[in-house]
Length: 465
Image (tube, rainbow, N blue to C red):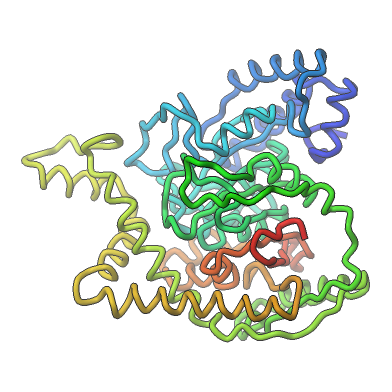
């Protein structure tokens, strides 16, 4: 067995018992990288020298039996949206192509403290805006199951790297489905925690009331290990929840007998791929066999989720991305006549088409005369979406839905029609609006051999369940 193909829970025990060395484990991961990365383009930056230096430290700590955790010596990656001290952090945008942060994001610092070895930064849609990783300014990541298809987005590089065993796990971000949708497309587990569970400090902002970091891994148990490492209150993030982090590994051992699972009728709609619906319904039947009670529920405001999201998220993006103007850091246009010309040229040359589209949408929604009609109304409907979930959770313990309406689509299939692309996240967006936790787990394959994901939605801060 190739060590790179094992789960974290398995290989961690082998490291602690010295059945395998940290450098040997790292060798197996970089062997996978050398084999598959040239074709997949999952990484924005590879940190080979730093990784081997960290491996030596971890091995020494294991020999001395010092502060070992389940992640000690485990090679992982992080999305290129997280600041990493002394390492390029571009957010897949030309406007940040030379940005090297002087500090680590809290998530990165926690992973380093846990002993994990960060082998690289993964490719993504520019500023996390997209559902296919086709919006990266530098490269297009391919799906390991079929390189003619997208890996999902915006955390496509993270999902593809884990699926191809180029690292045991990765940390991505999820603003409207950017962890769960690529996890579904690439056949791995991907968890979006409750808003506030994981610190956003040092995570480059897209939409601040929606963004949340979370793990990708090949097993749910490994997601639990990763979440245990990165979750927790952070005084550097004003939205971080000061709530105790439970032992997620203990939660894994519970059975589901007697759990009440809700199936929202609004998520099984016309237009959903037949094979997706079949796989998800088979998974639901399997959970029934394991003792869960399944009942139909309704989330009537679901149909407004997409429209609400594409007012709120671009509005927040318009505000957050105003800082990239060529003055303090990042790209500055070399052709300048005056200050206003610098602003205009820098942003026109530095941002890609999708980012520009969302900035314009958001600026319009926030403009005088339109704020009440669009932004304020969207916030009111967002409250209705959240109320729907609160009412549903009075009757059920969790909610089951498809993660995406289709398996992975081909490159270029949806780029000419932004609305078609936006519909890829129709089942994931409502969770971000409500701030709820959700995980995508593999539940089958299409006849073409493409993975299909089941989405499990939980109550706030109930990731363990």
